[in-house]
Length: 99
Image (cartoon, rainbow, N blue to C red; front, side):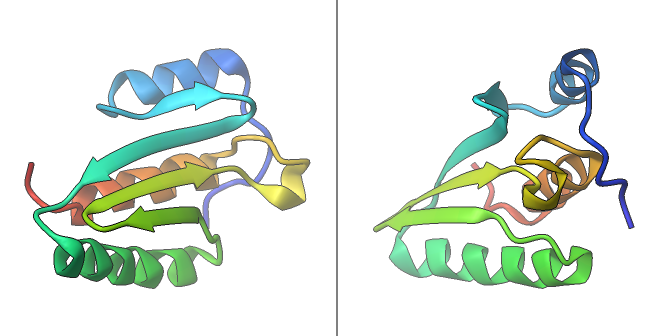
């Protein structure tokens, strides 16, 4: 399992350099996805759920019609970004619908 120790801003920036669309703000990393339609958005959320359960790390998800906004932070690390957030973000990108 990924480490749940808060990352430095330098480490967060370095990780996000390789992750298109993810941004860091207010001790969270976030990304917005646009899906083809509501059904694809819900299917995407379900795929995220499997990875979240595997990592025992659950994202904040917001869905309206075909959009899915994701916010990641680690609550048991003082609401800071950890390697677990970075790992889940990479997995989310892997299961995201094609742009």
